[in-house]
Image (tube, rainbow, N blue to C red; front, side, top):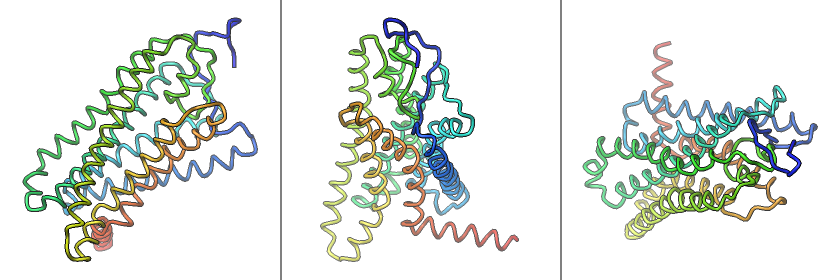
Length: 315
């Protein structure tokens, strides 16, 4: 794309390169991305509707799961809508304010997702390690405060980095080698000194919103595993492990993709690989979350049968 004689330019819009430049692959990528997005939207909305309608699912675990479904739908829509627009209209352009806004909301939602998964790990810790006091500890007030705090922290934690970032106006190019406005590829094309932003991004992105939730989740599972190992009967152990299996699968999946995407060295040769990890994180992970919780969760399957049975009776 364009640049000034000194290879520096003030930008008012960005050119989103997209997933691939190969014309022959456009339709092959568009159809799976569209299907994944529609299934993600339908699956998460179904989970959310089921939790709202079935009073048996009005428990702390499913309150957090409802929040997770909202995050999955929102993050997929924020990132994949531009991919679909590029494929349909060929319009790769996005204005500077729209790009900054997209970056802010995506980073906020990722932060919230990590925090809500930490809250879910605490819920599992109380349920397994202190079952007699579960309803006293995880009462509706505590659950509501945890959910609200996760949303608040998710949207606040990224503000310093975005405010600093929005102060930059000099870029070596207006082409973003990605399929949405993510912070890492944008930092790569800034021609100003980004040392302050790098420090803020390191503190906020890694320690505040990644390391702390990871440590909290890990400590919760250390206590959970320790408690499970002390259960004498194999049936009791299996039941306890099964209680945590869905959540643990989602946590492992999300952290694996985030580490591959953000915490590995970046070079020109790895940018395309990171785009694939990012596509998996923004498309496949939100798709898999409702499948994991519905296929491996007896309560969700029973609630679905109750709702479907109710519908048939009315019909």
